[in-house]
Image (cartoon, rainbow, N blue to C red; front, side):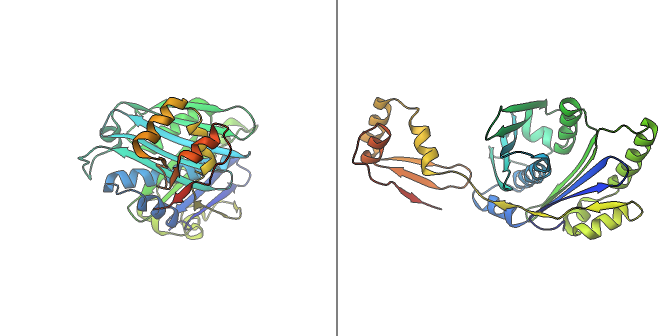
Length: 293
């Protein structure tokens, strides 16, 4: 397949056009191991992971990039995130039954796709496009055309074992427009001959040779991708701080402790009465327990 759990950028020399390949296997399996996803939801989540991996190639800052699809269909939410360290995580919400042959419009119904950039320092940015295309890749192409004014072609593929993606993009150029268009038409036509099976099974060097052996392609070093969730005790405490004291007291009286579950990775953070006193500014707090599933 495309190099497993890696992202690799490449450039078409003298054309002002670039490409990105991403392949996921262990990362993808880590995500699927956290929840019992139906086959079609799992493959859609694989496409989301491959897509956010491709989009992360544009990250030039410290922070997080997220891709969120929401709709009124049986799949109400798909979400994938990647940060500047190339840590990935993803989750989906759905209601049974889910047909194995259902397409994106059927599964998500009327909805929208949001791409959110969250720098650690600086302003948050979000671009939104409607989910009006039959494939996730086409919705993302529409986003780039509307929000970035960049001609983009995206190919995504996923089964229940692997996920992969290819992005081709025309960069701003001062070259003759006819030459730019001819280069773009040639490169995207060659890219369109790639099958999902090839994307999932060929490694990057084989894939690029298969498509572009007659092009002058400069390939950059691959970057590792990994599954990692940045949930923490501190983040859970921050969430609890938004609640009123009487709400916290009611939960403590009912359960004896408060448990915060991470939806992405299933980690649990448990806080007893002394721990809750810590966020209320009372001394004598003890360390809450954390259990992983």
